[in-house]
Image (cartoon, rainbow, N blue to C red; front, side, top):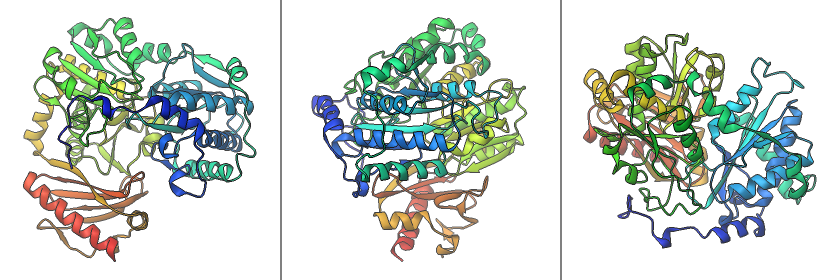
Length: 549
């Protein structure tokens, strides 16, 4: 249920107690037999809170040692790029990771200015270091990385994710091994975990200019000259995250008319407006969390937001306000594949199966192949690496795309280039992304899209994640015959960890949450909001029937 304070400024009572949060990181000890206190990798690494004993020093000691073991087994012996965002727990976790990595003899590269580092800058660094190398070769000096971030999660959370030599999120084959090893270390009281005191360890790390290398390379993926020459007025809000100094550098080095709307970094995020549920959350796709920037939409031609690690984007225009992430993905695809990137050889458009079917219609109109994969950006990695997928995007405002010459830029989500692409579209076409979306609606229809959550315990979530199409006995949804029941993604045949059901004009997908006792229903209808509500109701009844059986 939406809070009556959604979109309102945070108050003192909403703020996390940072000293308590950091103290709990060091003081509280997780119970390795309590599933809620174990290391568990979701689609974006291990996340939790020190206050709930789910993200504490022992977790990071064990997980870092497990990563050391894994990279050793895989023959990864090059440098490890280590970055962190602005969450209060990211600093302590970064310190812990350095102690373990140095003790293991890993060549660690941290930011040359001791600054925070966006996720895309780590991916960019890994790919740059591994350029021209065989990513499957052992002992080839391949680089990998760790990003300490819980992404857009509330201030009280911490996160820790591993990026292998391909530069993108680790796949489930890797994360299962790492999580199992980490939990084994926890059960053994950290026996076998090496550690060098930080005061000595920090003198043994190397330095890397994440910011300069990334920012200076932007003209290879975007038409920066066009943005500058058109004089696009840009307002960039880092939402207190890792992009804050990157936006300052982008404005200065590329001479753009770009204002950093809010340069404040505060681990309580007291300057935020509250998200839909009354919590502080740096979700740049949320109208509630982005309310303060939306209120200033008329001051800029394009205003943008990023989450704490800058892997997500939010696009605000004077005529449309905050764009729905699905809408902007469709516009970006239409623009990029519609002639803006003649150097691309890619015929594939990557989307997750819970993203809007507007993308399907745009792809068909462009005559390009739609590559539909399960939720998780990791599925786009192979296609972005070899250039066969020009653009990969997901409904939660995460995407990346190729350089103008058709080679890989990042294999992790990049909210910075997606934000700048909006300004390129404005500069090159003279029209805002929201105006372009209106054209797509006129050509393909106006879909209604929403996501709702429903309660589910651990057993029910497990049942949902392993469904077979035969478990669904219904033959229609919201008055339309079912045309497909999918538990495997059409693009790569991978299990979707749930179910997607389609009809002629609508679809829904149900997936268990990896962090809460709920399952998520994504739904869309090209017949309007009333039909969407019917789809949602039928979807919940159908899934509840399956889970209750």
